[in-house]
Image (cartoon, rainbow over the protein chains, first blue to last red):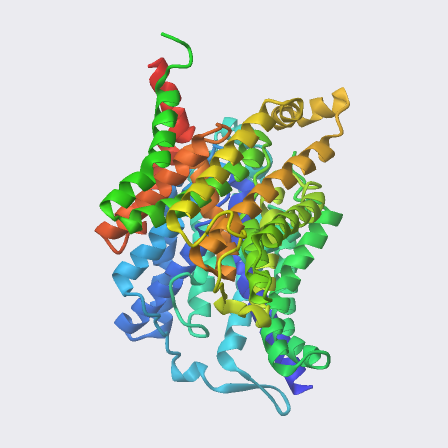
Length: 305
Length: 315
């Protein structure tokens, strides 16, 4: 029972983290029609910035805020220098160009921070176990991730659905030329959206950093997961991304936690321990394949065109 | 000047001649490294040619093409591991396995369009990747060493570098010829028509998905052959050969060379791998230069190398 609750919360936490990443991706994808493979690199940069700034400032919070700002700036810079020239190209050009950016960022990180991974230590007040139910303890930091991600998700929903800038973003998604003709600076809007997406990716990266090692290539696995999520959820749909992210986070975490024991019932123990992680990773892609076969536009198509 | 005598055909002829004569040079100079490097380039070129068939001519952007490299490789590796060393069994199995995989994932993936197609092919390739990493008996994550190359009963000795090189080159030229024949056949015309306007082709009365599926399977099978060659070349096969970045590499090779041109992918592969090799000799951080270079190519050199050669003729 204890284990189930704990793994359930772990799944929720991972799902919310995935949502932060997927939200940026789906916004950029849905609104600018831009496939950004380098989104995972921004996630990685967020983690590296955090690991550096926390040591510099000697404060976890201040370091994370600085890292968030740095990722936002990096995203805006990236959009301004290179990516905005690619918006009216086809998806293949996006894939190629941002694939090049992945190569660049991986080696840039290796050059600056070295090939070894970094660790981001938590401050003492976040390492205490937190009592969520009588007798059930959960790490305070993971709980903090859940809270922060939920707040950001709500904030994002509020901004996109209830504010003027959100209205412009949605309008830009449904008809780019029309909103431009109405006198809205669409280029600035796009830069803002891209920066927002980058900041969300950076936030996900810096929050994940204390749990995993900060290392080169950390963005690539999770990028593919984020793509799976936005495809399952329907491209451009924040709501779809949220539900799909929770779903994928749960499947991944629960699969990793319970599949090995399940498989041991039928397989030898060594075979089970090799097959189980592979199988639980496969489950996600299987889910995506099934969703796409049944609903080729994802679960919640954003209703464009 | 005759119509066929232009920059493009001259370059292609020079490259083919160079590839044919390369072993002469490497044998005379004793440059073993050059021969193994170009063997690898030729194998990847075959994979790129197969990807170009669906991507360039068929308009199907497969982001999971590395899966066939792995499947072809694992077919050879697993059979060798189980004591079946004959290439006459290994290679047909490799081709059949790739074709079957392509048939299944093609039938499912072709229900989707555009970005969704890119992502679903990626998903299937990742599944294959995880299946391979879960094969405890065949090395799992660490991969599988192949102790003996495919045995063709004295017909050809794959352990002989020069013979193996010519076999790979033969496969590549055969692959290019096959694609050329396909593209210029009625079948190929229909496939190219689908790329331009699928609804119109459907309205004319072609069974659209069946044509696409057949094209998809042919491409996967050719790439499976490249996988079997690659496993023999490295004496090793691992899940890493199916990872999505490898599929990305293949896409880059095709686009760099020029999509939808017959010989473009070969030029693209040579350029990509030689550049990678040259830059990594020059600096450890080769991707630092390679990455922005890709970005510049996308921004300023549309149509890839083949496009540039085409412009030279007009300009």
